[in-house]
Length: 339
Image: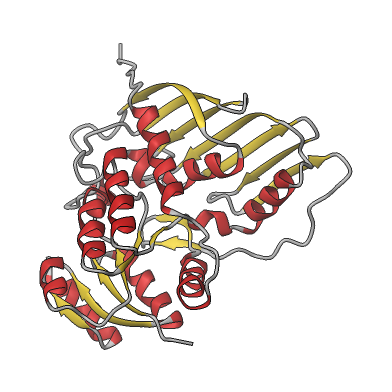
């Protein structure tokens, strides 16, 4: 089987996890970051070549098959399109972009250059999520009537200090950076969203971030289901919960824990989900944690697609749908004002 060769654009914390899994499934050949020290440190750890910009990397025409985009959210589209236009396949971190238009431009670039554009949706690989998806597809829950998504995390001032995170042009908003994987699961498990109403407020991050730290959303899905999202990054001191509760005609399930990693409740007519394997641990960033770390499965699928003709686990179209739903939510922005 052909060895798949990779480059990484952006050498921040998430890039370290990418590099680890690239090393298990292929070979890391090149990395780049505008902070030279970061690029050089990551390159030295894996015997790769360091570059100070994506332009320098692409001008060098490295012998790689895939470029993994780990740069800030607002640069995903630019860096992906540059890489696709140079003839490389692209694996893009979440969110695919922070505008629907940019997602469309990325897909167009992939099609024009006959290259693959992979979107990362690692929460789909959580064992309870996969088990519930299977039961929904088998019709065991019947028609889905309603859904409740709860995202209660903590992001303190230190998280945003001296970082692109929190800025409207590079971060985009809490739903993009913290909770886009959760929005993806709504689409994957329940369906596409038709109408939304939403309220937002920045309670404790004034002067720190450009957008909300808390939101409440009401949704109507195209299939007739209704739902709500309650989210915040103000859970005191640490992450509290990431949960999804689904109410169907024939069953109710709740996928919970901090990171959608536990099947907390099930009552399904005639069946019981048993024997779920342990999931991977959450992404650990020192003072805070992120979503479940299933990047190994993302890379395993990518290599299978490119070398064995396998089926892509998350297409660029599905990455676009997540951004469309978030865009639909943010377009209905209303704010409560403190009395």
